[in-house]
Amino acid sequence: MAKIFYSMSGEGRGHAARVRTMTEHLRHEHQLVLFAPNEAYDFLAPIYNTPAIRGVEVRRLPGLKFYYTDRRLDLTKSIFHGVKFLGQLRRNVRDMAEIVHSEKPDLIVSDFEPILPKAGRKCDIPVVSLNHQDFLLAYDLSSLPPVLQRWAWMMSFVVKAHHVDHAETIVSSFFKSRLRPGFDNVVQVGPLLRPDVCQAQPSEGGFILSYLRKATPDQTLELLKLCDRPVKVYGLGKRPADGPVTFHEIDENRFTEDFIHCDALVGAAGNQSLGEAIYLGKPVLALPESSHHEQRINSHFLKQMGAGSWTSIETFAKSHLTSFLDGIAKFRANLARYRGLTNGNPPALAAIRKHLPATKLA
Image (cartoon, rainbow, N blue to C red; front, side):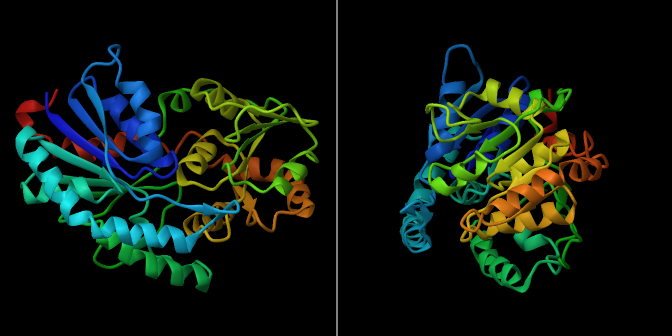
């Protein structure tokens, strides 16, 4: 049994969902300590910091965070706090290095989190990077519109700031691309899927599933009322029903069940949710915020794959919704080539396990 330290970004649930998937596969063989900031800690700690789960511990870690003003992503405020975080990075790495030196993990795995990997390299512990964001460095993005290519180029410097000398770099993404020169050793895998999703038998239950951020404009909800079938909304908390729109508290089991049996998905364009939708054969109307360029890139590739359509949430209009609903059958037919075939779990686990000490492999 090896000891694995595993850290992640704390913004949104995509990072934590990937980490949980890997944890569920590894925890029966190895001891894991998860380092999680912000929302990731709030999601994972109640699951693993309980007597019922042995061999997994979740600890809080400082992390980057998106900030919102008037229900819109505030890039200025987010960048300001990001610079402040980076200013404290050296001290945080030093503190973490003391923990690594004391507890001596056999391997460090990181999902777009800079503190633990940098501490690990100071202590000569092998580091595996497993995330989505490394596509900004490794992938040929020449098919993107020029404005998104420029943003990807700028953000590649942020990704580089997270980097150390990795023993392995694994990119988990619902889309694939040619690798750029110098990145030939990057391992490309599909989305990391929860067990319930892997084992699912999808069906069309006659309703739309919508996962929305708390900052969602009211106009979005008014438009969802125009759907030709019921809409189940998660992410905004429990509210009274509004016509065909019902609101549900986040409950992982219920949300997964609705995901498996919905007709289509409408909402944010995170890599994790799009990856699960494509695996299940669910068409997607993606609604990224106009200032959330990574989700706009995801939306571009979603459309390129024929798996759905998109518009920014600020410009979402009835015509976008009508066009999407009219095209669901076409999108579903396009998704047939991907359905059930994009599971990235086996190759990701294989890439991690090959860096564990041979004498400690289960």
